[in-house]
Length: 105
Image (cartoon, rainbow, N blue to C red; front, side, top):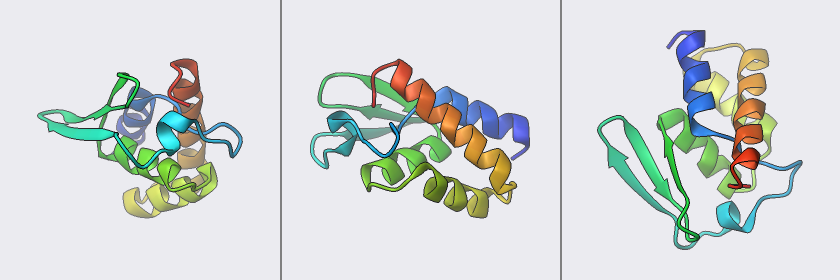
């Protein structure tokens, strides 16, 4: 995966973590449903919000649900993708910011 594709994946998913505080919508283990689609995954939250993500976004969301920091998530994604940590952590922070904007976290 090239950098542009990776950024598109992260940006397409939206934003997740609020300075170590996680939204009840994301933090709860319960009613979140994940449905595989032809182009990725549809994540359905208990409040009815729907988020379309790819595998990278799904890994990031799972990390957030498990209480992991942005840096921990970025290290894992860097390891998986082979991309430099500095690039990945920037992208994950953008993803989290975008999730905040749409009220996921």
